[in-house]
Length: 478
Image (tube, rainbow, N blue to C red; front, side, top):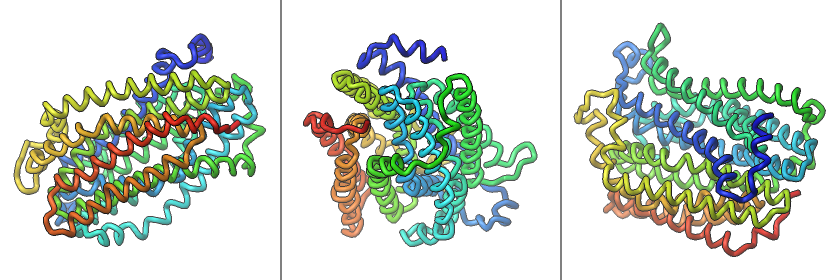
C-alpha cells in the first residue's frame, strides 16, 4: 500500500516517474541475463566425470561442445515460447490501461486471462520434446553438440508452464507500476538459480551430477520459486486492496479476443526476431564448432547489455499504456523520448567498454577454469570472441532504439508494424544473406556477423521513424 502512496505524487511523463518504474524492471531483466550467463560460466568450468559421461553417453562431449550447445538450445526454447509469452506479457498493457482508467474489475479480468493462457500454453509446449534432437541434427550440428542441446532444451521445455506462469503473475504488479515487487522476486530467483547451478551441474552435497541438464533444471526450479512468491503476494494484495480477483477468475471470451488481436502480433514480433536469430545461430554452427562457441560467448556478454533493455522496454510499454488510458498523450510522448535518451547513454557506455576492454568482459568465463587454451578448453576461442564483441559495440545503440521504441508502440496498441518490420529485416537482411555467404564457400564468422549488425541497425532506424510518424496516436484500446 505504501508503494501506491509514493507513486501518486509522481508527475506523468517525467524523468523521475520513468526511473521509479523502470529501474526495478531493469534490475529484474538484468537478473534474467545473469541467470543465463551463470549457466555458461558454470559449464565453462565443468568437465563430466568419467562415471557420469559413461552412464549418460556423453563421453564424446567436451566443455566446448556444451558451450556451443547452450545458446542454440535456449534460443530454440525461447523461440518456441515467444508467441504465447508475448501474448501473455501484453497483459502489462491491458492492466496498465485499465489501471490508468480506474477500472479494477476489468483489470482483474485481464490478469486472469494471462494466467489461463500461461497454463494452457505451458502444457502444450511439452509436445516439442520428442522432436528436439532431430531438429539439432537436421541443421548440421554434430552428434556431440546435439546431445547436449537436446538435454538442455528438453529440460527447459518441461518447465515452460512455470516460466509462462511466472511472467503472467508478474504482470499483476508491473502493469500496476509496482515494479519493486517484480525486482525483489527476480533477485531472489537469480540467487536460487546460481546456487542450484553449482549444486546440480557439478553434483555437490549429495545431489546428482547432471551437467548441462542441471543448468536447465536450476532455471526451471528458480521459476517455480517465482510462482510461489507471486501467488502469495497476490493473495495478500487481494485481501488488503479488495480487488475482485475471486469473482473474475473465469475465462472471458471478449477479453481473450482482445488479447489475440493485440497480443498475438506482439508475440509474433518476438517470434520473428527470435526465429531469425536462431536460424542465424544454426548457420554459424554449420561453419564450425569454434565459431559457434565464440558466438555464444559474445552473445552472452551482449545479453548483459541487451536484456536490461527489455526491462526498460516493459516499463516504457507500461507507462505509455497507463498515460494513454488516462488520456495523457503528451506525457506518453515525453516518457518515450526520456527513455530513448537513457537507453542511448547505457548502450553507448557499454559500447566504449567493449571496444577498448573486450578481454575484461570475457574474464568471468574463466573463473572456474585453469585458463587452459587447449583444443577442448574455453581459452582457445577467446580471441575470436573478443573480435565479435566489437560488432556488439557497433550495433548496441541501434539495438536500444529498436527495443525501447517498439515497446512504446506496443504500449499504444501498434503491434502489427513492429512484427512485419522485424520479420522482413530479420530474414532479408540477416538470415538469408548469412546463408548465401555460407553457401558461397568463402564464409568467415566476421562476414556472418556483418549481416546481424546490419539487421539490428535497420531495426533501430525503422522503429524510430515509425514513432515519429505519429500514427500510433490514432489507436485506442480502452
